[in-house]
Image 1 (spheres, rainbow, N blue to C red):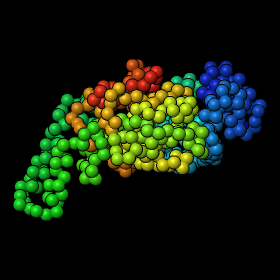
Image 2: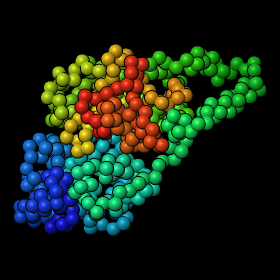
Image 3: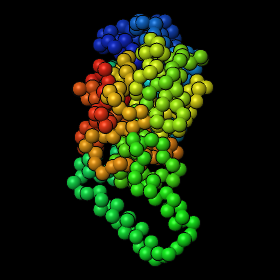
Image 4: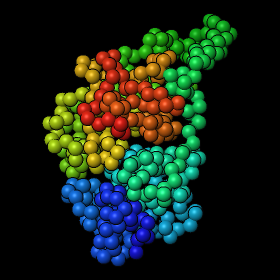
Amino acid sequence: MAAAGELQFVAGVVARAGASGAAAVADAARKAASLPNAQLRAVVEAAGGAPEAQRRWLGAGAEEQARVAQWLSVKSKEVVDGDEKSVQKVLEALDGCLQTQSFVASPLYPSLADLALFWALRTSFQPKSSDSVPAACRWFNSLQLDESVQAAAGQDLKQVKFAVPDVWSKLPNGAAGSSAPPAKVARGDADKDAKKGAEKPDSKNNKNKKEAKGGAKDAKPAKDGKKKGNNAPAPADDQPIITKMDIRVGKIVKCWNHEASDHLFCETIDVGEEEPRPIASGLRSFYSSPSDLEGRLCLVLCNLKARKLGGYLSNGMVLCASNADKTQVEVVDPPAGAEIGERVVFQGIEGGPFEPATPAQVAKKKIFEAVAPNLKTTADRNPCWLGQDGKVHLFTTSKGPCSVPTIANGIVS
């Protein structure tokens, strides 16, 4: 039998009911099934709601349903019945799973497995867990801040304030709020380079040939953040972390239903490169037809590693806003007239243009995991990044700030 606390918690979130309503759903689930995970599944049926909402919790399609079943089994065997070492292994496995998606079964919204794992692991996360399992902490944080989760957990949930990754301490003015000019660091590096050049002023080695060949390109950044050459400099350690993400204005050239997944659209998106990028987006539950997206502008996160989603190679991510319980999702809109391929900047962050990280650097240094918890929409429905000091930095193009149609105070992912 599922633990009373777990069952009532899951019932409270799924049914979006008060304590009495959650208790009634939990009682109905106990009568419907005897095994713990079967009872959790019975909660979804007992809570009622539209079939589409039930599929969200149990998995939309065979692949998601298999993931839900797998993680529920892991929760039971390795967390509930496991020891401290096995719990740590689960946290590491969870972190690996969440490197490239927001939740364990679906890329966009939590499932029954997310709720069960959250409840089982709620005392295993510590402030410094962000050093070892940052992706899992990002997932846990998004759930612990969800209003329905907070209401269902009540006093059984003590929120964890995760330690800020080391990279935050290096943020310059505009993000960390420092008044010191970042040019001081850059000038020190320039002095070192000048000394090296003075030692061998007449050198004509291969290194200098490369510098001569690429100098003009490096002196003037590529316009609007379009694709740069292979010799583009690496991002500076002290630049604001959000500026290491390569977010560009894109146009959805073509959009169609994924053949094997009932929640994915397949798209080709022009982001100012020689060829449109193939990208898969889990938006079919929120847009009735591919024609709703085809031809529209969007924002694309371009420096994530390409990966297959349902067998379709996806090279980027369309940024969307969602409400707290992920029942509403909207594609972020660039302002009218924004140029395709233009790189988004962040209002109030000075000192650019900044070099984005490569996809390999984003993955290795877990840059997106550090950024993601602070991507929000404002009360005026503008997507933004919250700096460490709480300053709001709007997603902005040369034509003005970006926006979403209706979702205020939401989440951007």
